[in-house]
Each structure stands twice: as C-alpha cells, then as structure tokens.
Image (tube, rainbow, N blue to C red; front, side, top):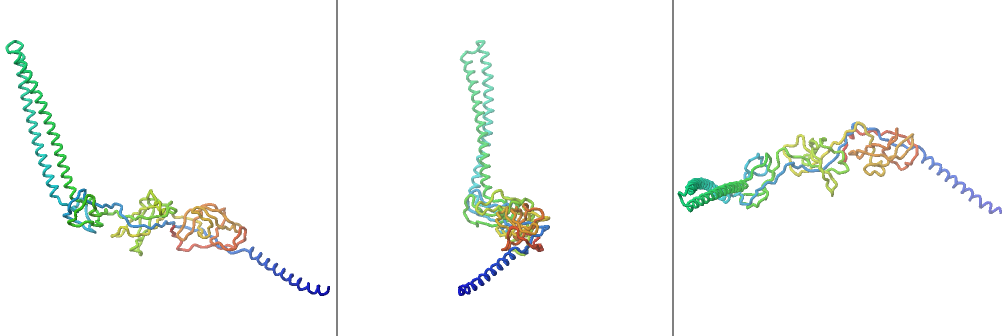
Length: 402
C-alpha cells in the first residue's frame, strides 16, 4: 500500500503541472486573441482625379486609297511619299491615245447627228409645202367637180394626192424626231467617252498628305488598283482601346492626356470626340477616338500611344485598397469596418477605381463607420481595435483606372 502511494505522487504532481501549463497557455491565447489590435483606416481623400487608361494607335479620320476606275499603262506620276497635295492637283495619268480616239469618234458621230437634224427639218418643211399645195389643189378640183367642170375621177385623184402628201408630212416629222433622239444618243456617247478619258487622270480629292505610292511608271494597272494612299490635312486622331469594365464613364468632350511611344518624355492633350458603338467581341474592348489639341507636326500612322482619359474629379471620396476587399465582382465586395471600436464586416457598393488599385465606396457604410485599409490574420467580427488613420500620399491625387 505504501509503495503504491509513493508511485502515485509523481503522477499527480506532473498532472497538476501539465494542467497548470495548459491553463496558462489558454489564458495567454485568450488574452492575446481578445486584446485590441492596431488597424489602419482610410481617410477621406479630396480632389481625386479619376482617369481611364487606353492603349491604342495614331490613325487618320480621312484616309483614302485612290486609283483609276479603268485599266491601262501608267505613264505619268506626279506625287510621292510625303508630298503635300492640294485638292484638284493632278497626281497620275494613264495612257490616253486609245480613249482619245474614241472621243474623236464620238464627236464625229455627234456632228453627223446634228447634220441629220438639219436634213430632217428641211424634209419636214418640204413635206408640209407639198401637202399645202395638194390640199389647195384638191379643194379646187372638188369645187369644180361639184359643178361638173372636171370629172369625178380627177377629183378623186386630187383627194388621194392630198392624203399621200399628209402621210409624207407625218413620215418627215417622225424622221425629225428620230434624228433628235440620235442627237441625244450621240451627245450621251460623247459625254461617256469624255468621262472615260477623265478616268485616266487621278486628281487629289482634298488637301492632304501622300502616305504611300503603290505603283511606278510603266506599270499596267487594273481598275481599282490603289496608286496612292492619302490622308486629309488635320485628320489625325488617336484610337484608344479601353476595357469595357472601365469604359462606362467615358463621354465625348472629356479631357485626354496622350503619350507617343516614339516620344515618351512628352505628353499631349486632347479630348474624346467619338465613342465606338460596337465593342470588340474577342478582346472585350471599346474603341474611343481622341482629337489632339496641339499634335506634333509629324505623326506616323499606326504608332502605338497611351491615353489617359479623365472621366471624373471627385471633390471628396472614401477610397479603400482593392486588396482589402473580399469577393470584389466589379460592383460590390465585403470590407472590414471599425464601428464603436470593434471590427465589423460590411457589403458595400463601389463606383470608381484608381490607378493604385483603390476603390471608391459609393454606398453600404453605416454612419461613422471607418474602413480598414489592410486585413490582418487576427481579424474577426467584434474584436476590439486601436485605430490609426492612413494619410493619402501626395502623388495619389491623380489616379488612373487600368
């Protein structure tokens, strides 16, 4: 009995020690998990510029690939890459000898038609004169026949001669009308051949710049082959591709800042002049067209450019980093707030997104609630906190939504 008692004493002793240690650990953990933790909350920012980013290229609003409407040998080229041209200036010509012959033939046909008109008019006058003579003779002979001065046969022949003369007048007038129609046809054919001759000359359709010359002298070109690529003066603009998720606030007239890839140290200002009505179904981007206020003197079509479109300037805004938002779906998300000194979770609605990935809270916060800017490992609903306010950095005033 005594031996068994002696053996039990160490077991009880170690058990008490282990229980004491477990209680101490539990106490420490409880105190640690419930003591107030330090959190940083967002301060209300002022005068925040919200900009939307778009990557795009330099394009031309008026760009034309011009060529001939007919095919022939290119015999004259009066413009080249980089030339400035004015409206109506002759740019190129095709061989014209064949078409000039056709024009001459059409002019000869017109002269023949004009002569035919005169001959037909003379035939009408002649037929009318003969008809008048036959009519008067018929009247006299009919009067004489009624008094039996001439025979009935003579009267009938006079009546027949008048009818024949009247028919000849109708024939002459029909030939005159036919000659008029032939004249109109000859005039139309001449205009057609002259038009075809003019199609062998390219005139500048507007004041502009030659971007490229596609053909050289001696080339046999087909109808519709481009000879020059032209752009109209002052028609450069920027084409920006903007993510649909960021494009909802873009409107015509908004200010734009642009930077060309070849001139990264310079920035250029402009404004939105057109928003495409059809988005790209593959890239899910919207086309936005920008006109520069003072573009560079020389631009290159297709050059890559970056655009920042100012869509809003917020007088006051409560911004929270996107990393501090749980379940953000582009519109809503859950944030940690401090209410009466304790942590709470709130589902809020967002509006704008800034360059440094901060989201503007539009609604969903109770009065006097503060939004936590960084989520810690020990966060749980109802835990007490010690609050410090984050001050926005000076360079965060202008932000770009990407």
